[in-house]
Image (cartoon, rainbow, N blue to C red; front, side, top):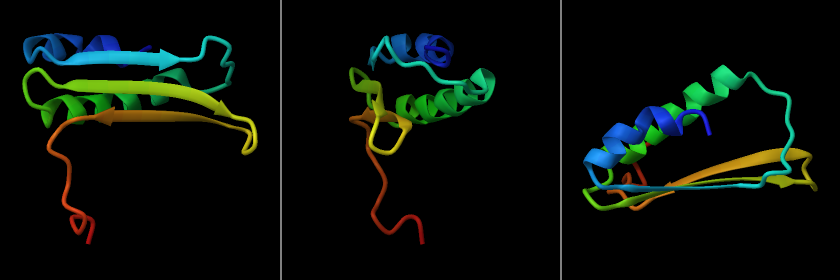
Length: 86
């Protein structure tokens, strides 16, 4: 997945594990460079705030009920306070 390769050196330095689980049958018409930029930015933040030896997971799947593709990026980093968006 584009974006993952760009953050791999930093991830490797911090010994963070990046796992990617994307259904191979997904077909979507997108701006590949725009999506890659968004994914890279989210991954950068996930790695930045995940301690050494942590993990980041990327999943993508089709939500047929909503006619959309869902991309989920999770990590075991420090997170944000619930009221930090105010």
